[in-house]
Length: 390
Image (cartoon, rainbow, N blue to C red; front, side):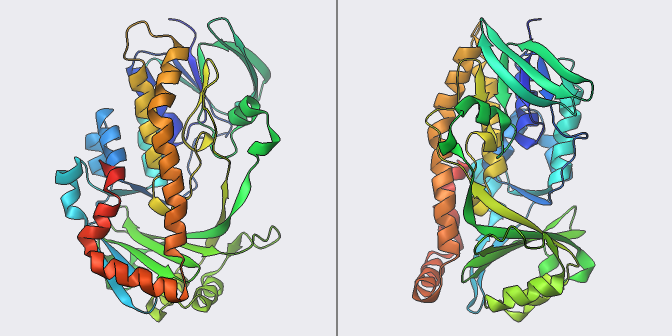
């Protein structure tokens, strides 16, 4: 078999890409900078578009086993109460897959198990891509390992190494591609279900709209734990504590006008971890010869449409499908993949930013938004984002 395609990064997008490419008959080498492939995040929403993609890769049964299917999304205002209830039970019939929520570690492990069992796949941890350059029919690259610097030749390189992508940095080599703070910080926590009131243990997702922020929470792992994310606008304080207790965050959320039941939910979590949001400029292209980017390395997006992982999964499936043409070269397959994905992914990036502004309105604009949500109702609100799920 020819030289492998190297995938830098073994997160959700990278692992899905490895599976798709291996199923397309390609030899794959993962280079993962971490010592162990594990996920430190919490909840992850997988919309129907991503669910269909994973099902096409043969994961339908596993998704049903590990994922929880929320039956509704409740949109609430901090004082106006329930604005709309989106019935998610129609998703499977309408879009070919349900909405699912996972503990991120569970989905990553599911993908890792499937990738690891494939004979064409090798995974190296403690392996950090350092340099690469185009050569005839491939890429010459070097990576750092515990044994020192290793040089190898690959038929292609996929940068799936996230927001702070080394592959992107080396490819773009431009100061104008620097990270910039997006204006919001997320605080994340998991709470045992028995510590919250019964209404919040239901198999439903909840979205609370606040002036300058919002809160999302939903159950995971067959309803045994509740994933909660608090997102607040504000300046980034690099010296601020990265972990705080529930009572401290409760006071912050009260200052944003949170209803008492929401504030009590926040205090139920003993420890909250901070995740500031960053963005990078839109790229004019993702591909240079036998090197391409995928997921957050190509199109980092804010989480307000819950499409970050979903778009990386769609990238991965499309990348694998690009090799379905007999005797196609890596360069041509990478260009085909980018052509099919770049415009749509950039549209989702822009829509996610807009959704965040919509969520965080205050004063009269928030009142007008709430009236619009009530008028649209659950079906109308679900239809607003149908373009994502089709």
